[in-house]
View 1: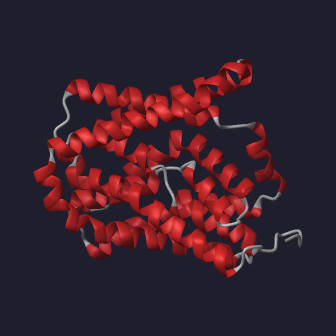
View 2: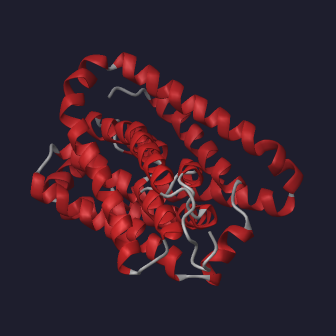
Length: 299
């Protein structure tokens, strides 16, 4: 996908705004639950940040999709949870507090885990490793620039919440809406500009997106079942592991990987499909059992 240097700079600014907006949503209370009942959130984070990237690598080695598609799958798997997962968990009558705490912790850890997971797993697959060399991705430079793009706005947001809470409260919703609108506008502009490539790639990308997301759902549910978590916690963990901040992934692909068409389409496609699968899963759970039993025995 053809992105001009000016467009890449603009997208970098939007990415910084996205991460700053994410940080404005983080609260100390979001992390307290992780230490109060650590089994569920730590298992979910392990599934999201460790197991899913490893399983994604295995899928790409087994099915051998086009290298750019494989890279896009790895990027999405390396991204933290997105805030929309909290809403879907609430719709599913799941443990929203658990979902929020997992989103918060994974977003904070993403400053390090996202670039490391991408470099490690993409480097192990010979096809994506060759692609990284082809687009001249230097590991040290990529790690440094990603830490800068994600870390600085994250720290700035946390400091704003800590020392300027009134300003953080005023900025939170407008900034999140603005960054979302900018990102969608950028995607639409890139889609129109590169439509002939997108129409060719879309049929090749969608099956991998659907399969990848289904495996993430199964992984989250499976980990919860192995630990014998309550249905209330299982719903939150399943949704959280299967819904990622694909907007962040798309921005990284467009700014750090020369806008690789297959990779960008995977991230954009995941962003649409996980809403469909998440909503369907929430509707099914809500219809099947509208009042799941919590871990403490309450309905």
